[in-house]
Image 1: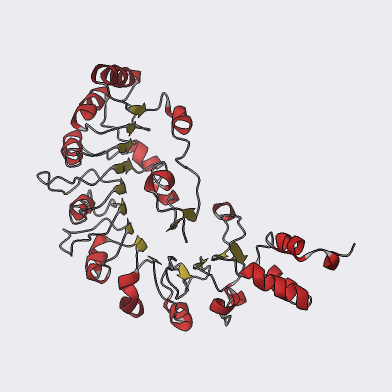
Image 2: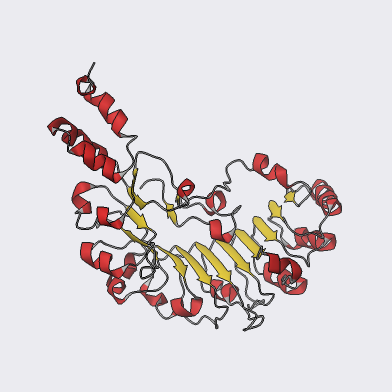
Length: 388
């Protein structure tokens, strides 16, 4: 039997496994029948992704198509060729194009993620819904009220100048590699649910203070936060309670230099900080050299709603703390899953829905599932609601 004698349904099933743009184009050119079927295939495509070296980060689904070179889509009417496209993402290799970009269709309820590469955004004139960017371009400001996610913002200082432009923001990811911020005095962000911060100081600047937790006080409905730093100084108001926060990761940087010169957060400061969040359910304190068994005993008392405590990399925590948590739960009728270096292999079986897999795109706006077990640099670029 010749391949063209196969029923259309069989050919469509085969074409679903064709994930490269140039292969789809070549199939489209074969004949009228294939052109019609490839057009049906492209209607399934939601994500048009530029392949990078870390190919294993990309999902292999029939709604994903990859291209190897920006020239492949230059001049292409993406809204026509891919009528249901949500995201197009490419990591540019040229030195003159250092920023990631993505494009989203102007459709409701589009939930794409975009990194501002202003030439392409202006060229295709797509509506911005979520943005992944290192800096804010003037040409996206008129669309910013629809933006729900910002990824890799370079600092809180940079963000607060434009924070009023993003009243519907639900997720922000801030990567401050310069180690300088000041007090946040921008607007209240009522809709922000997820905040992720990396704050890196340098030897030249010294041990600068992070204002991430002071910023979180302006996010009354924040549910989840991920924070990594090589600084031991935090600026926050310990008198203010934050009732909404349920998930929190606080991590020291995992580098060779941090082993020889650890900058863990002072326990008294950390204790005062955690007391701000009485409704915490899931807490990770990674690589904090100052935390000991006695501190674990204090933690379970000051956090009455805690059900998961992860202190991986805290070298001064031993099975003594695990035994105490177990006895405490029996005595007071609580259930707290406690993980330290001695039993960390159990966390995967106890929490099978939590993923540590690296991926660019994660399906579902679910911090616990897609972010809690991951280091900051492994956090997904795009959290896409399931119904999109």
